[in-house]
Image (cartoon, rainbow, N blue to C red; front, side, top):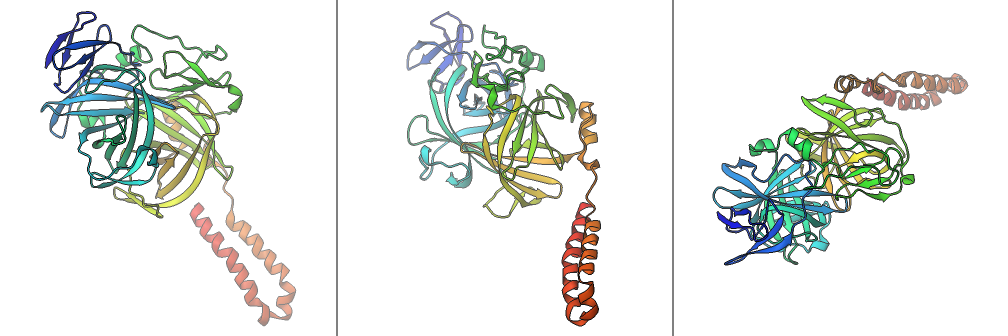
Length: 479
């Protein structure tokens, strides 16, 4: 560990790692650049947005038998949101990165690149690539800007520093190809993790998170809609965009000044079964409905997706369709899919069910990425019993989510309000319809049967079987 005095304010600044070349003074936010025999003041570093992350500089944990401590952070912003990269230092002197995005975490270390790697511009979402001897799927390709930093870091960054990164996944394995410094990428490899697996200590408690979320150092912004002035209900630090319920304008909240992204007339109004702000206790965690969007497939069928957030449980989705309700969670553990009709995850084998394009028709409330009418994604759904896996792909991202059915009575227990129960809707009696068709066939062919029974009965029998057998099967499936 190396201790120096900040050239700007004189406060003590620690370099815990000899590999660190930069630190941000915790008092005056000056950027200190360390070289062979001196520490230079490189000017002020932009303050990070204090989001709803439970992590902070000083958080400690262990993984794989190795203890680590969080010593720095950079915050990166792309066109649809932002994420954190936490710089961690292990007890044996190694360094790594704990990436945090949308309530999901990955822990990686720099590895020596082996074999040819694709140029950044040629990486395609969903395509397989061989990295470090393992075939991985491209999950995320982005160009992002650094918006702030704190603590110590292994390289020099500042406001406007650009990161060009591609993330790849295979099961729980995770690889980042970092093209920020040139055509030959740095390779960081590791796996998806949870805070429970990391056995984290010195996390921010819920009160500290609530008190600081959405604030910049010495800057507290009161948020009203920049378009109409209406009050906006949102979750500071978590949500990256709000759709104003009054004027339907799309408001970006990833900078210290809320800005209008698009005028409200592009967003349709729609009613929701669960209202924005509704609170429910799900699995012992306090969740709140923060956003809702209406989507439509390429056959015209529509459904509603609700985004929920809990400080402890993270993000959760409830999906309301004509068939009922589902509870969905984005997956850290990815199945292997070679574009066939089946996939396997754990002990379950899923069969391909649907493939369609989903389009956002309307949205209201807050989201952890920017949502707008007309956004499209290619969706492929797989089914194993009552469980469903869905792959959702855009030009920049691929994600997998696991969904299970939820009854209306369970939703009432969670939120204390009545919701539509499609299971109580009257079912079509398929067998009665089939019987009517059979009577019609007999009536229509009554005279030919009387005069030429031997020549015509088998035609009527085949027609009757063609109606009765499928109806019987569908009736059993309906039951």
